[in-house]
Length: 529
Image (cartoon, one colour):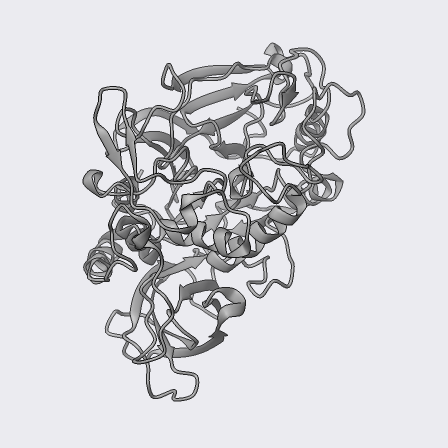
């Protein structure tokens, strides 16, 4: 495996240069541990500013999306070039940023060269006086290759959960700096980008008496119910310099899960939670999805509220397709989940048809299924109901397992090669191998599922395995009690390297600081392994 996967010396030098520029950005709000750290009020004098940084997303071989947020109404302009000098730059005229999208905007770049480093800078201009533009904010990303080439990407999830927010004394979200230094081609966020149902307190006393001190904001002082509060929850994370620097250098593929709205939510639910005045989850999820689409560059969602979907496939050259699932918006209600017929399941019938069709069409050597929830881990919702796929019955598939059985059968009978599952959700890291000889359901080929996270949230003990699909767990690292703080338990991320020559895929489970905890190498061209 080539150490400089996907980038080489030139890319590494580019990242170091971009890091220096990004670090010079002023914090969008004061880094104090009080409500005064809320986002700055919009101003009308001077020039527009993009203090919340930039980020690229859903990058392909020829296209990408660039995001920013202004501090006032502004016209977004993006320039791209092959070098950071921006000689012979190409100009892209983006949207007018205003209150309808919380002053955020996305500009679509197209016709880009494959497998090349793209330098970009975002300028915000006064709509009435275009000559009055603010200081440009720069970023960089690498387009997907159109030939076999080394690939490296990372994944994780779960940010600012259980009240563990940005702690300046600890260096903020420092796991993002660890990930940036791995020089990835892109990052998959597996959901729980925010914890809309978890306020951020000013301070928390740890079991040993130490004090954890958070940056706080007005919006994060309570659960999110209004659109403004959901927007503020997404904006909160961008107060962290590590995350802004990471965003400016590493493009993202973002999905969502429950905490973008409320713990364990499902469509049609009415909350039994005294903290909420708004009890209708459908109302809350619509507001959350609007804020989500405003704060992330996702090509299948319209940032102006015009609809769309989170599930999608991203092609990354001949070696890799990434299938992004949405196990939240189309699921049935959480229940004991032991029904013998379940066409809706956790994906919904339409998304399942889409996934089967796109997996069959894929010509990539590796088909990575980015799932916001694990398959064989028993995730409960109260004393009798279940939140994920497994429900603890090790026998034949029941409930939501029926959809997964149908999908696994399809992969086997269509002889679809190179599938593996990546997820987060449970706030620890582990590796599961599924095999029919250990399973109650046997009509599938063996496959791997890897779990990593959280990025900055409480650590939780491991949950049980469900034997329906025959999981075995060769690696597990989890705390022995609930809600262990990031000061007591490391945060986790996963890394995938694909060798451009041999096609071998290597998964490494890492912890904060970069230490490798577990490694598994898979061979290309196999239906199961």
